[in-house]
Length: 119
Image 1: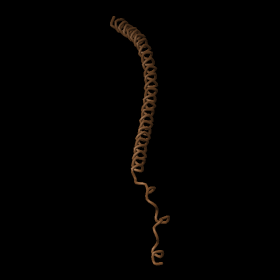
Image 2: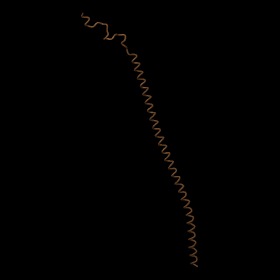
Image 3: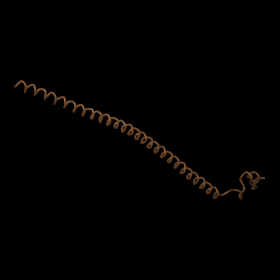
Image 4: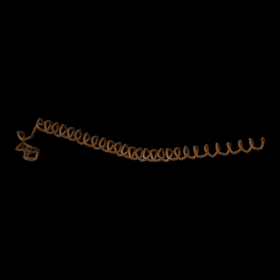
């Protein structure tokens, strides 16, 4: 009788272990599928992150170029304004300088030279 119980107990344990292995195998398959899905999602997010990072780098570079263009344009505008002011001031000063048209020049003077006075 003890042998029958022992055999029955062993067979019951074996069946329970097999059922548990089948259940665990099913859960392992589900978990492996979920892991594969999460890995795919991770790869997708990494690719999106790289792309967004690249776009961000390009946007930063484009903004830097735009700032550089703006600075050059501002320098050109202010340089043009300074040149215009300088030329305008020079023209204004030139217009107020006395001209010697009214007074004769020393080379074409009608005044007698010192040698002429001695004669």
